[in-house]
Image 1: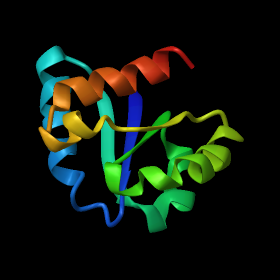
Image 2: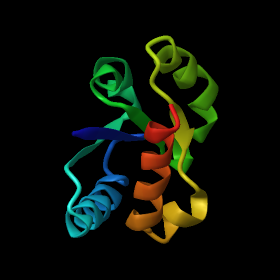
Image 3: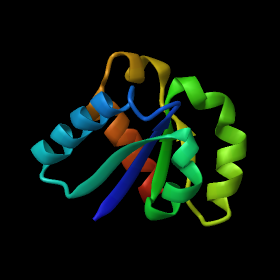
Image 4: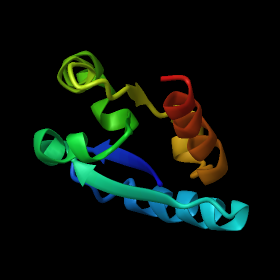
Amino acid sequence: MKSIMLCCSAGMSTSMLVRKMQAEAEQRGLEIDIAAYGVSEFDEEFPHYQVVLLGPQVKYMLETLSAKAGAQGIPVAAIDMMDYGMQRGDKVLDFALSLIDNH
């Protein structure tokens, strides 16, 4: 099973996107664990996931969070602002899966 962590300032704004990504994964018949957390939970949660995607509001922390997760071989990337704003669960899911598959 693949696992994707979304991270934003409080974990709330990404929860809707998580639901859309989960619906898309189910439609494709994929078993994927997707969860949203606030940045304050990052250190505790990221080791449980294969990739971490950051919401636009915490994109400024990309370098810091990438350094932490990269030490354990976990890629961290920012979600495209348009895909985030339009709640394109399919596009964000594809992006996350590409990061897992290419890592």
